[in-house]
Image (cartoon, rainbow, N blue to C red; front, side, top):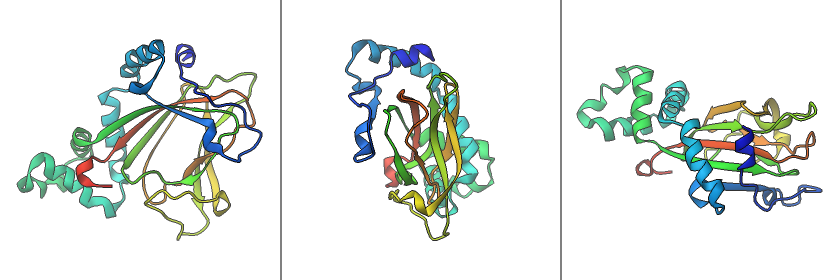
Length: 225
């Protein structure tokens, strides 16, 4: 973890006195776009050790039963693209592990490194429609007993507060039901739905940047957004 922090692209973010424009304090890097050659070479070597196809398959198998029922046509679309129309009728009878393996074969994956500088916050949202599963691995070092906040999970006060299109909503409409600790080796995984409300609160416990490895399992383009 120490080597990962040392080689983490921090970007140009800085300390924020407030949250006038919190987007300025998050720096996102995709591996192929890292400008520093040493950093890029490090992550190209390191990430296969962290994220392998077995992890992606495990995540998909774990969450297959939580994919919203009104998106079942998408799951059948996966089966149809892989098995053909004749075999799709048998899809509902196979095990969750087999379903997860089928989806993993056609799903798309995106790896990103995100660095949240002091002052960064993100309102409650449910994620982009193409996302299916998000896996966050935290790299922050626990210094002097202070623990930075990771992603928070929110429960809306009203059952009508739903969104498939990931609009951002003020946190006054939610109760915070869980907050991950942003500590090295801790991780958080969740499935996207119209009630998968989550966000990031500003860090006041530490002035160190919050470094996160982010793996997203996406629905393939042929299924649309």
